[in-house]
Image (cartoon, rainbow, N blue to C red; front, side):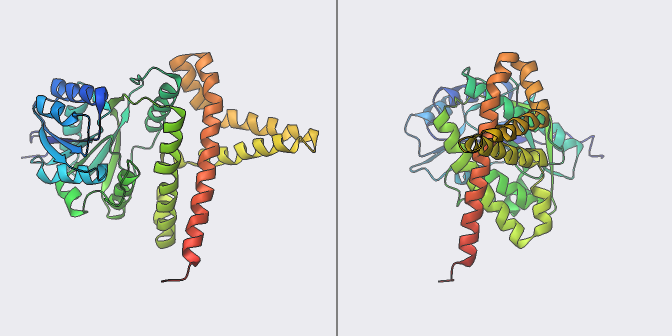
Length: 343
């Protein structure tokens, strides 16, 4: 019997939750509406708002942890009790689409060599404030514009064969916060020779409400700093792998050049206190920034109009500013650890 004639593999949906609130209710409702036949496993990670009761009401297999150990540990525990061949990890603040799970199943049915896949946020985020719309739409754009041969995994909408997941030891539980545990797993998958695909038609709706504080905390402390540390560790041990990983998604050359241009623009502004003519540095850097990122701004214009696209500019440039700062700090930390005497 050919691979195509075999029925699609069954899927176990694993959802870690810590005080999920209304978003978690919407997540469970969408799963029960559009994936009724799938095994649903909820790991209540030390929550205190009664999210576990919602899981029971929706017929999920429930694992309750007395204290929070982070989503990496929660997902690993859920994976251990899953009975299906495919593990589909979904965050507690997303809604799945009617076609999401079926497309996951058929992707693995079509390609027996596929070890894992990741999807994308859709282009209609749940939270209506500007920052949430911008952040989640930017994430959508990044994945829709990315290479289908992926080098990272994604815990918000990512599926993997259970035997492969267990053979690699699952997520790294040393990451105690919602961090880069999914990226780190993806790098181990690729280093082991497994295939990961970015399936752009497999989408979920992100419901998260972003505020300036929550955005900066997540972007700098939970993503940029640990991601920098991971990349530099890989570069030190395997430069060839580092070159492969450092050119994917939001690590492309255009992003790196944009970081340099943002700092040139800031430096030009600062220098105007002593050299008024240095304003031309800021003007030229800003112009090149717009040109390089024109596809991004055109995307926002098409989705939300001219005013929204204009509001995106300062936040997008600020993103490059704090990303560059985090990389510099992370690199400094890495160098200090390298030259510290062994204890």
